[in-house]
Length: 87
Image 1 (cartoon, rainbow, N blue to C red):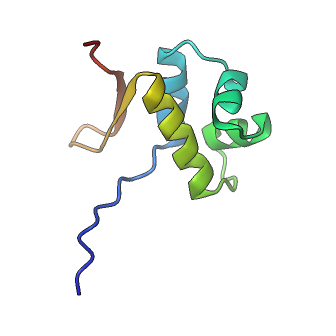
Image 2 (image 1 turned 135 degrees about the vertical axis):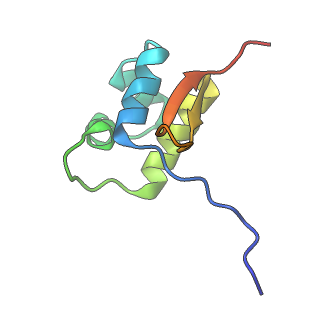
């Protein structure tokens, strides 16, 4: 049996930082929106090799997407982030 579920790659620390900046949010705002600790948000955005659970990164991604960003997967030019078009 094949798994037909396609997993979305988790965003990189740079994508998380860029998304937060595009939305003019502080790390504390993201912590409040996700109910994660501020140190967890800081570790998730860090380029250092630090441990953050996939669940925490997914929660951050979801909160940032709900606030109006789209994470762009690798497309030959590298992964990125942009604001979602207003309807």
